[in-house]
Image 1 (cartoon, rainbow, N blue to C red):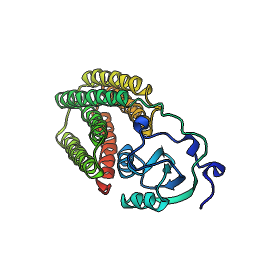
Image 2 (cartoon, helix red, strand yellow):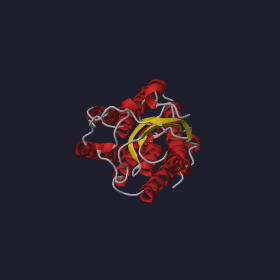
Image 3 (cartoon, rainbow, N blue to C red):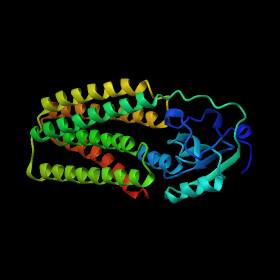
Image 4 (cartoon, rainbow, N blue to C red):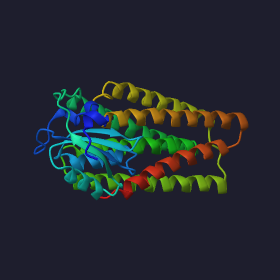
Length: 294
């Protein structure tokens, strides 16, 4: 358990600095390198919670969301870090801990001002496309368009929470995250209600507006990808933003395919199916956020 990080390959040497590369107050020079297994850490909202919890005790954080592992360089005892992680209710466990690497800490490549501007632009683009797709989906009777807009809102909510949490404590970030989760939940349930209404009473989604607006959303997400690609090596939060935008492209393509199938078959079920699938993903994300402990 106390093997040296440098010899056990825990990944400390490649750990990313906190956004901006600044040392949090009280963090001190790193003396330990610890790796934690966190089964409940699988989305950017949980990463934000962890950053807030460890902001004043960690020198570096390296998130592996797919592997559900977190590497921390810290000066305080490992029990302090583990205690804060356990308080989040994500099932955190210590995998290994040892002395921090002897080599000097490389300066972070992150540009905090640039990242803030990029996140602000991403927030604006996603919020605007949410309104455009929601209104177009309502007019075209397309559940797929409304769902794709809801996916845009989910991304905008995460970006907004990330921006709001900068410089604020964990409690403030937790309140913002829960508010975003509640809004996502309400919108997702409203979407399922719309799909049910269309199925029961019938609807004729307009294929051409579906495809045109989805292509517009695809262009917006491509722009987001280009913007965030310049910062995706600056920190895990920017990597998560890149993954978000890449995933949104798939949702856009799904709505475009659904529109083509509606035009080809004359049946509305492709629109209902795609709308339900995207809505289910947003609903799952909202429930994950609401389960996070403050």
